Length: 145
Image 1: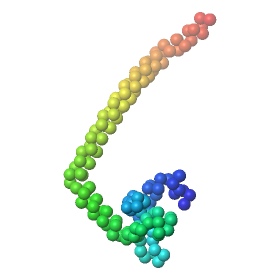
Image 2: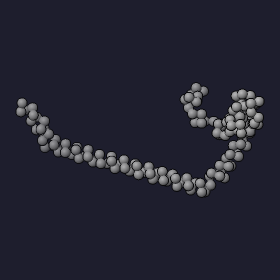
Image 3: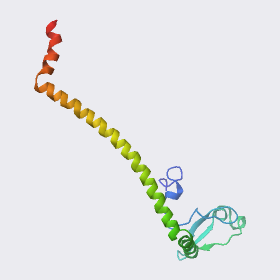
Image 4: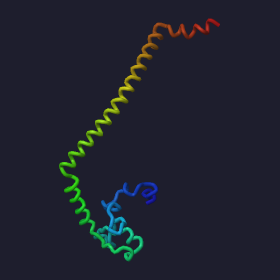
């Protein structure tokens, strides 16, 4: 429980058996939370205020979990997961990927330029080592003293 405390983990990122817990609200303005009966046979969404302060603080009735979740899922399918919405979503994702691709391409070009510069320097260093020019340059100041 301490690992799932709101100070450690945001409540909406903690897995829940209740898909809509804390996401939908009663008309009184308080969130609906999931609860199970003592018999562990029935699942409901209840008013969080009523749960904390007693049934007299909120007149909202409990809603069966299966019915409310089924209703919300059907509404999502009908109003959000339409052909037009999905096409728009694909278009937005493609645009985002395109702009990200451009930024990554620019970074790659910069890294390629840096890599070519380093390769050029290494090549010059190898040539100097192979022809002993580097050794002559290193020992020359010491021998002149």
